[in-house]
Image 1 (tube, helix red, strand yellow):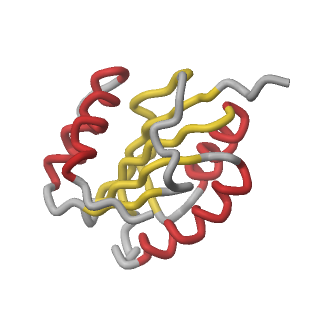
Image 2 (cartoon, one colour):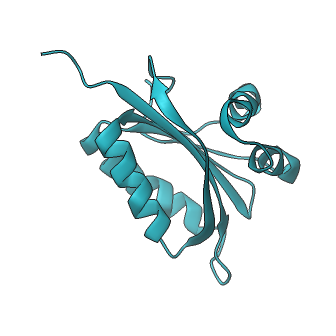
Image 3 (cartoon, one colour):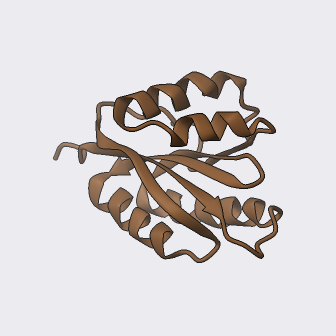
Length: 133
């Protein structure tokens, strides 16, 4: 049996009004266990107000997770900026890496783009992130 083809999604969202930025560490910790059980890997980046998350894994698992994320009241304005098949994992080292950036232009720059351009911008910023996973 061959492994399931991989699918990837990059989405951006905004922390909901009334939510403390401190909740993001809790979100990442909970997501790691869920992602591991579903063979989903990825990276969540947060700038204190905006999220960008890149997810990869079997298409059904990734799409199910996206549906859950869109229903999560801790963030709003969920917008998928890239979606498509991927040939290999970028995040083999962790179920969900987490990084914070102090530069709001990083996330705003990604949110202003769509498709391959958004994905390229996100991937280009990665070497500058201090990723915990």
